Image 1 (tube, rainbow, N blue to C red):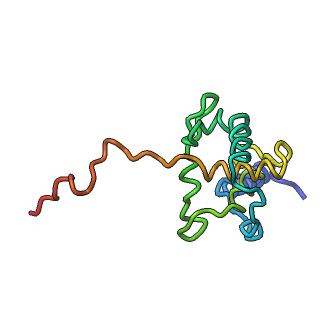
Image 2: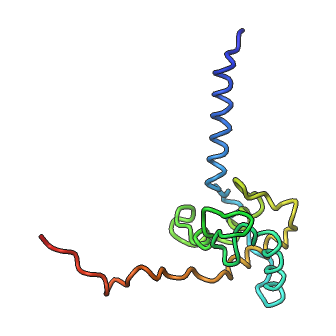
Image 3: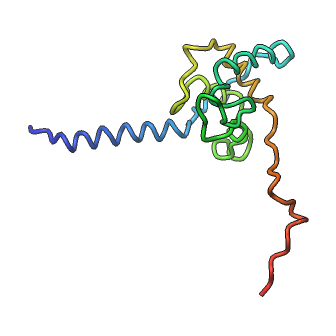
Amino acid sequence: MKINNKRLFLVIGGVMMFGVLSAGQWNVPNKAKELKNPVPKNAKTAARASKIYDEFCLECHGAEGAGDGEKETVEYDLRDILTMQIQTGGGLLVDGELYWKITHGVGNMPSYAGILTDEERWLMVNHLRMLPPKKKSTTEKPAAEKPAAKKD
């Protein structure tokens, strides 16, 4: 049987692309969503989490998670990830989802499973929950100040 190299290349490439695109969506398994964060939120754990974030996340995600790191910029703001509507049917991502994402990584973000301990990854979840809210755009006027639409 003769194998068509071009066809084989296209099939393998298609399978790899599907895997990359699926991973990019960060489809979190239901079992991961059920995980509960065992790390308490207090001043001591917040200080530890901040140090870990500064060491491993700051260079890409920036100080407030806006994706404006000095080493690399990220196309999304972590604060948007925290409130993603798609994966949770309209609510906040649960701690287990965030932990899974930190553990497995995606795209340019590496898996932190072999880099950070389980406790350190849960500390990162706590840190993400404490990021400051996004600032409202100063160029957009509140609805009351916007001019009324013209009626024809």
